[in-house]
Structures are given as structure tokens and as C-alpha cells.
Length: 447
Ligand code: NAD
Image (cartoon, rainbow, N blue to C red; front, top):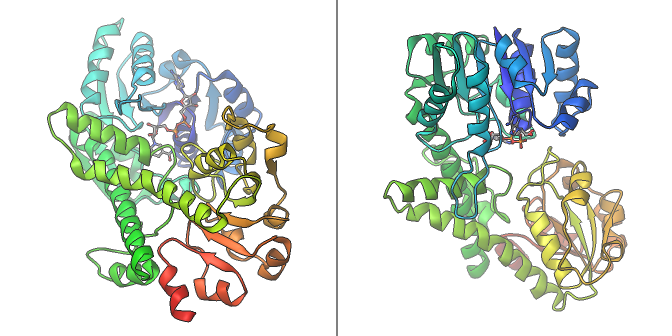
């Protein structure tokens, strides 16, 4: 099938490369000409395991190409996916400027039947708005369909998620649109959920909000564990074995970040409000998530007393492992807070150093950035002379460190773990003061 993907970011680029790998002819479009120029040279704008090779192979097989021209893509493709950004404004309202812009460009360039598919995460009823925009701007009398096909891939394992999805959601209002999308996804042999467009749009927001709810729920339990001296890891084990609950997304820590959960929770609260429903549950989910970082910062202050002039090591900058994505990453907020209190920071991440350097706006920092913030080579370099070490992202390489060496390098053997990646008793036996999230009980029992 000839298809186009408009918006070649995390979702568009992965989807485009995967559709090409399945044998389709794919054109990936982006209005960022630098990004397209790099992609044409085989340079990836993002870190995603396996993506570079997949793109390279499919360019070579002439199944994948890149352009800045929506016109070229619309002319050549029967199916056009929209996968541009859908950020939220300050009040939680989704900014659909890019979606509307793409819809207009598609409309004026359509030369025959086209199926336009929303892959971006959008508020319910956006499909109707896209349909209206296209009907308004279309130049020739051509037929078209709108469909919703929300994306559920996770950064860090995006290719595997795309190729082996739990389900593929297809929201359609015509048999032609359904047949095209069913046949496009047929090679994946996935469970298909074929529904109307509004239900498909809601499935995405409902799914992300539910996952965020699980995270905030277990974080609330972790906070109770911290107060009473119980161990949230044990509580999670006991809860997760119940098949009705399940173990996934019950890892206590400093809360969710990234480009999706915070934005999608905000958006869903706003959408609900707009249609007259007060989504109190989600407001609490958001509140708990915001509180987690403050509680973590309090743990640092409780441990070090005064932050000023303390050297603090930070392991992990990306919002989760196996990605270089730092959008809404807890590490960035923690770095800014600690620098504002005149700490000296030593930081390391296996992939996100470049993006962190570019993104940090340090307006509230009183020292020159070079003196206050040092980007280190690895976990050992980071630990040198630190008053404590923070674990912010649970990269696998941080789980298997030489702790004897780390202990020698630290000024004080203190680890504050925002992701509970270590066994509290083991760390204590190794001579660390180890502070987890909701795992205080395990320490007390052994004392
Ligand atoms: P992104 O910022 O990485 O990519 C979006 C791309 O669209 C950018 O490269 C941008 O330059 C391009 N773009 C914007 N306006 C354009 C236009 N008018 N014409 C051509 N290109 C344009 O975003 P993303 O993370 O890929 O997310 C895209 C959508 O998918 C969002 O709605 C997001 O919520 C959703 N989503 C993201 C993920 C994820 O893990 N990142 C997962 C599922 C769904």
C-alpha cells in the first residue's frame, strides 16, 4: 500500500519504518527541514533501539523515503496518517494547531480518494473536526474517509510494541476505511478492535489515564508505607498476584513523566470538564504525581539537611530507560530545584546527555552552569566526591554497579533511590544509607 505519515517524531518515524518493513511504500513527512535532511543521511533525530537499522534497510529497499512536502506525500498515498504533536496549553486544553494545519494541507492537495487517519493522541470528537476542515478546504470533488488509529507504542521498546501490539484500535465510519486499515495491519496478526471514531479516540485517553492512575495509586501506598514503616515492594507483590489487579504499572517511585501521561491526563480532565463532567479521580491522580517529586526532594533535604554547597550525583535523566526523551522528565525538575538551592550536581545518563544539555534553562541558578552542573562519563565518574547519589531513571546498567567502588568514590555512602532498583537490605549490608520509596520498613526490620 502507498502510505504517508505526516509528523516524523517518535511515533511517526517508528510507525513509518515499521509499515515499510511490512512491505508498504511509505513517505515520512516533517516540516522540520533539518530533521528530514538528517534522516535522508541516515542520522536518527531520536534514540530508539533498532530504529536506525530499520530505517537504513527500508531506505535501501526503496520502501521508505523522507520529504518536507505534504503535497508530494498526499499525491502519492492512498492512506495518510497524522502523527504530529498534540501538546496541551496551560489550562489542559489540547493545542490542535498542528493537526488542523496538516488537515488543511491534505485537503488542498487531494487528487482522489484518500483515507486520513489520526494517529496522534487527540480529544474525542477531533475526527469530526478534521472531517469538517477537509470538507471546507478541499479543492476538487473527491471522496475521503476519516479514521482513528491511536498509537500505544512505548518509547524504548517502540519497534517491538508496534510489531507485536496487545491490540490495534481502528475507529471508522465506512466499510472502505475499515477494509483498508484491516488489510494494512493484517501482517501483524494482532487482535483488532474495530469501533466508531469517537470510541477509538476515547480508548487512547482512557488507557493512558488508567495507567497513570495505577502509578499514582501505588505511589500513594508507598507514601503510607514510608509513614508506617512497611515495604511497598512486598505490598505490590501481594497485590499484583491477584489476576484482577495485575503486577504491571505498580512500581512506586517519583512518578510518571514523559510526553504522554502528564499531557494526556491534563487533556482528559479538561475534555471531561468541557462536556460537563468533573473528573475528580483524575485530578487526584495528577495531584499525587506532582507531589511525588516534592516528597523526593524532601528526602534529600532530610538526609543532607542543608543543600547549599553539597555535591549530589544524579543517575538517569531520561523520563524512562532506553530512550533519550527528556520531555517532562522528573530529573529535569529535580536538577532545577537543586541548582536553585545552590547544590553542585554531577549527572549521567546513557543516552539523554545531549538533550539535557540543550534543554536546561538555568535562569534561576546563581552560579555559572559549568561550576554548578557537571556532565559525567558514567556512574563511577558521577559518584566522585558526592554527598549522596540519586537514582532517577531505572536504566539496567545502574542495577549492576560495582558498589564497593561506588562506596569508595562517594564522600558519604548515601543512595536515595527514586525507582526502588536496589534491595534495601543488600545495600544496607554493603554499608550504604539506602533510602528507597516506600521501603523504609525493610531497613527498620534489619536494624
Ligand atoms: P514528536 O514531537 O516526537 O513528533 C511530532 C513531529 O511532528 C515533529 O517532528 C514535528 O516537527 C512534526 N510536525 C509538527 N507539525 C507538522 C506539520 N504541520 N507538518 C509536518 N510535520 C509536523 O511527537 P511524538 O512523541 O511522535 O507524538 C506524536 C503524537 O503521538 C502525539 O499526539 C502523542 O501524544 C502521540 N503518542 C506519542 C507516543 C510516544 O511515546 N511518544 C505514544 C503514543 C502516542
